[in-house]
Image (cartoon, rainbow over all chains, first blue to last red):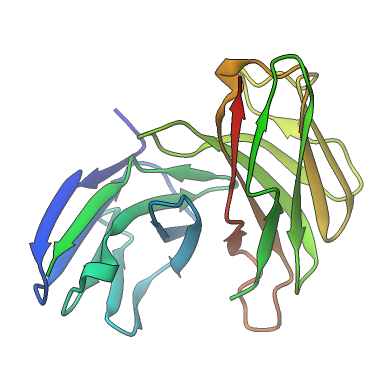
Length: 106
Length: 120
């Protein structure tokens, strides 16, 4: 079993829909990261969380340390949100989930 | 956020040659830099961790004599793929962690845009 599990692996949505991507982990962590990778490959760090909730624009990330679970929400999704979203946990080094491929259709 | 650059963004080389990839932190001092490799449709895999001025720590299964890492300054780390083979073709990504301002983000990693290596 992987230390970091994401669901779903693939997600297709219509523009405007509310999107949730989930991440579960099995190890003790110091922080959890949500990353975005576009088709060109470059990675952008969206959030780093150690507790609670963070919001940036249309993106919201939450974490429940006791349940070892985090969610990334996208409100009013747009085709430009199409990308791979990666959850990574930090305990000295980063361990990555397998990613969620999000496609938002106009 | 802080900016990390990589050069080149893509490179094609012949089998048996060596390729150097640079990773630079442009607006902060990176005490630690990480090198990752990503194969198509797979997640990132950590290759090695380098701290400025000391030898890199390689992950299990990564040949240190093949993937030479130098972190000579707080803003530059290099990865040299020596005697490259077609199976080394991959997407190489660096990240940097350091004292990114005074906003408590010093534990955050900032990723470079990646370098796509193709070995013919």
